[in-house]
View 1: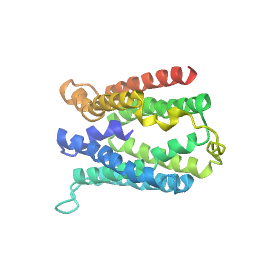
View 2 (view 1 turned 90 degrees about the horizontal axis):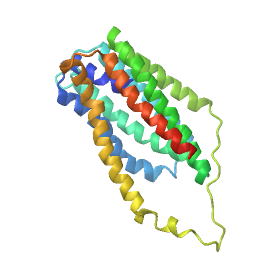
View 3 (view 1 turned 135 degrees about the vertical axis):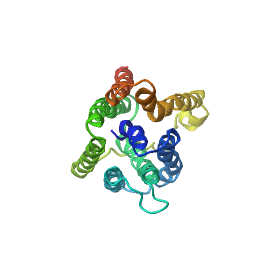
Amino acid sequence: MVWVALPFLVKSLGGSDTDVGLCFMGQMGVYVFFCIPSGLLADKLKPHKVLLFSAAAEIIITVGLLLTVIFSGNWGAFLSPITRLIILMSLAGVVTAFFWPIMMGWISTGHEEAELTKRFGFYNTTWSSANMILPVIAGYLMEINYVLPIAGAVVMAVGCFAAIVLIKYTPHSPVIYQEGAEIPKEELKFDKRPFVWISRIALFAIFISVGLFRSQVGILYKFELGFEESTYGWAVAIMCLSNIVIFYIMGKS
């Protein structure tokens, strides 16, 4: 919901196209940087507590976004609404770094091969479904009032926190090789496989396109082509629908 709303929010608050890009760069750039310490700490921290803390922080940040939209005046010389949005999105990047990778590790621990593939297939289908449905809702809410999609995002953040509080899932113990057992060679040389580098290059190239789509295409739709915000919401939904289809096919195969 924030993805869809943010470009239009920045423009409505007097920001430039560059400011829109800075908000998204603030989030993803900080996220990438903080994935390094979160990866180092992942094995030393209890995943459930980290996820609770991250989900609680996400609520605070999303409420901050909501207040920034409602009270859109300058808070002193250096705290324009655009600056506040960039700061909040950067903080969201920190939180995401301590949520997303740890969540992925939490649901995968102790699961291998076909079972692991099915779990990730279902997990990816779940978040892709949200990415498909909520942008459509956000697009129509934007046409009513720009505050509404951010208020909806606050509700979603609270729901995320509640789900983590209520969950009773205990991950399987990780697979441990018996003493003297031969470890498969491919596990010893995982980083040297050509597949790993192919996947990294492909992800980098694809997300250049996704980054442009998230940050600038909404502006193109509304201010250059004359479409409504809901049209952009549908465009995001179609992109995410293709995610769901491919995740489902790969999970089954």
